[in-house]
Length: 307
Image (tube, rainbow, N blue to C red; front, side, top):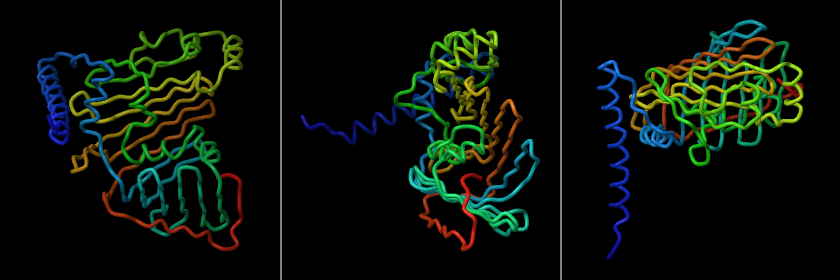
């Protein structure tokens, strides 16, 4: 018998979409009656997210950004162009619209130049300087996920997660290593989505454990999805090794032919030295158009080893 693969594939895809639809409908009725969301396991949550996940190859957008850091606050506009898994290009301008900086990211390199009078310089190198500036580890995939509206650090193929319901959302918590349990006093099965994570052991014992651990041994990641639409509304990373956390929120999701895409974002990075917040909203966006990435370092600019 001849196997009709296109027909089988279409039926499988149809089944996934129907399952997502039924889950959403069921949850809608439950919430209307004041009942909690249906319990789903991690694979079911990821399957429902797969059905609505935004797909893209090229993105161009204009965004308005506000930054609040211990050193002060500022706002600016940015033009962003992205080729999936290949390049991220940004041109940054203040309110008056005169470009002050440009950045070009590839999977393994960072290029940046500042045109600010009195502070003209360029940087070329890897992601270490960018991570130091943000005070949190970043690579190309992370930044692409952040700007592309997808969960940061979510490993759908190899990740191991525990699913919980949190009000009107589903939360996936990554299974973590034994040192985390010793530090916070809660194992991953008992961790609730809303739990705040603090060091629950004497400082001297914590420092000894930290000295015997790798930084990834003391990392907890959590992802939240809307209980009806399965939009990826929040990511949170608690880094107990460096005592810092990163929370990324997405909102104002809009339906497009490629899936649902958020138009508003905010990031909170908390460290022992202070907090950094970034808020941005998209004023214009276009999908599917191929862009160029012009990047020429101006002459006579000072080369630096960091931002």
